[in-house]
Image 1: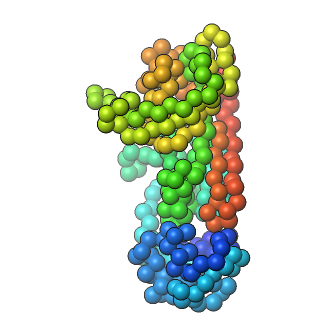
Image 2: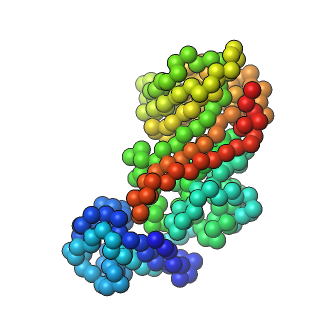
Image 3: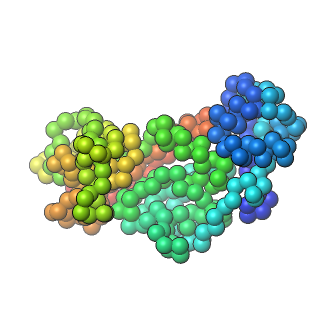
Length: 296
């Protein structure tokens, strides 16, 4: 699997087909999720090659075939962003299409202003081209986060995320002893009526939110270390759910009034997914010295 960049905006994607026999049309539409407009460009420009040969939309591709897709600059108009500091990037995994980095607490995933530098800018500088956000971490949260290195892979990864096929596990140090060692929290989440920064459990109008919580260790009588896995991805989901059941995260400036920690004790320690272009299971672990130092 490789990607060859001809300029800042045109690129060629080449990979070995991991899927069973299907038509070229089915591969591009149902597996690669290439938008209708882009599929039209690929077809009319004859920019799809199988084993270095031009093919029609009804030709069959089989597992092991080499697929090459040529994208022009007008196929995927790319928004340029200012580059940040590549030295601020801790790369955990990288291939031709994806990069996973270990975000520090206190760093935004993306800026709110056009020239504001955030992790996205630093990652783009590290890669040498504009990258794209697949999911986010709160500014106060540290840990593993995925970025797309080109617009081709972005909708494919977004579908994996929507279908809950990207696993995300977090460690959290919480206030009090959570008695249930293994529990699932199912509380819909909505916006706070008076504080736009916050989210709340809203049983009537909130969006579906599911968090699985497993107690790892009890620091009696004050704290618990838990592992949280997301089944949905609402803003502040873990923070809101744990606060709602009376166990707010230590160091949370929004949902824990009596916080004493210097950082939010929430860390995304693991990501896992099946790579859509190789079907290889990717597991990435992320460490945090500041999180470990904050444990009792």
